[in-house]
Image: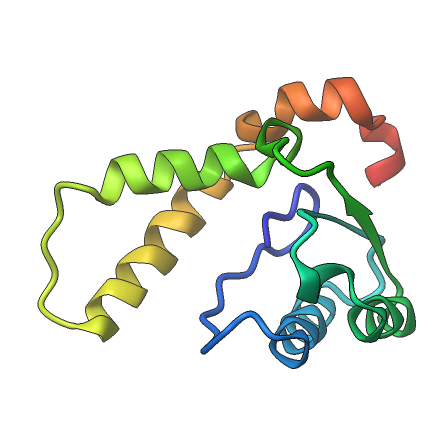
Length: 130
């Protein structure tokens, strides 16, 4: 979860089933109490199913679904691209070391809003995020 005005979150799930996605939504809400959360998602089945949408509503999280084949509309895609590029030459010894590296790299690069600046200029008013 790439937060523009709150706390970003990196979490690892066993799968992308609706229950796992709802668990991630709960963690996002815990990290960002009282904040407006607008979450941009692709149209993966577990993202748009009724179960997930209902839980998001209960948590006060607004979901925006981007059209299929439109990763350029999702601000986190640039984060993933940079994260992969940054981590590609690094060799790790274990899964735990890999997860720690992902967490550290994600936190470092998401401190900059520049990844979403163009997206924000096109789709939202920064004044509304306050």
